[in-house]
Length: 95
Image (tube, rainbow, N blue to C red; front, top):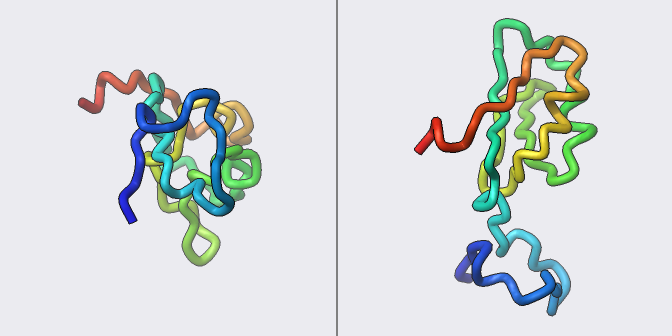
């Protein structure tokens, strides 16, 4: 199965068949990237709960990072973090 990038998504974002969301790497259009300070993170997983794209990676109850293929950079995780350990950085800083 070949994965599609943002520019291969049909006009209007129409989902033509069920169960194909993993084929569309929507993180390509992100302009801001969330970065977590693991020193301050208490692994409350509030970011995981609020992430609309299920882009927060969790293993054994610990937030281990992001799936940047699907993170759109909306900043909800940073806004909802009770410890404010997630900051949004310009995507251009990572290219």
